[in-house]
Image (cartoon, one colour):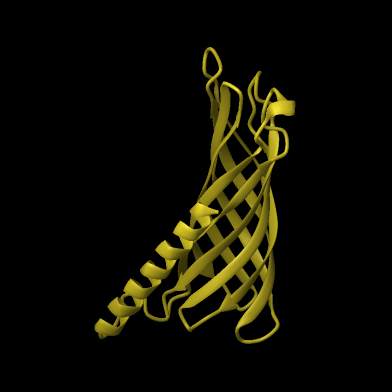
Length: 190
């Protein structure tokens, strides 16, 4: 939960600094563009992450940074980097991260509130401390659901669930789906 609090504080500070910067500018180079950036933080559940599943702490904190392009009212394209941190069992850990590209298909209920589904692909990597250490990479699909509320013209808040299918595994750390529940802040350049 500490990582979530830190992510929200960081996002709030960044949004405040961005708003102050925007008020001090006559014309931003990004004015009225469909670009946005964001940060999310939350918790990941690795479905099969440790070799010793009986003693595995299969949940970890996560943080993601992202950038997006709002194509139209219903469709957006995003790229992002998601750090899943690590899961542990006695004397062993597995850590991972992923680069992703997704399409968000949204449905606005009001001017401020919308829900969305997302799907795309990721390129992920994991590393463990086995003897010898093993590092693997792979690519597969990712999908999720979320809700977004626009606090102001520039700032939105997201609540989201996303699954990464079959993050790469090694001999002592099998492939695992990773499910992430997160909350985040979006800054729109408009």
